[in-house]
Length: 67
Image (cartoon, rainbow, N blue to C red; front, side, top):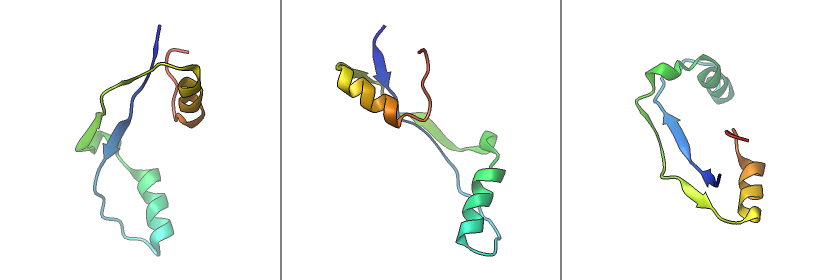
């Protein structure tokens, strides 16, 4: 089976009351209710045709499926 690179995303706007920007960022990641995401999807899959491109994607991927 060939490998494909897929850029998936999820985005939402949050209003966070916090002591500083660092705390706001931490709260956003810790407390986000991802079921409320209003902008999500994936870019069209890109076929990875070389071992080099597969290895590079493997190094940078947040998740690997089907391996």
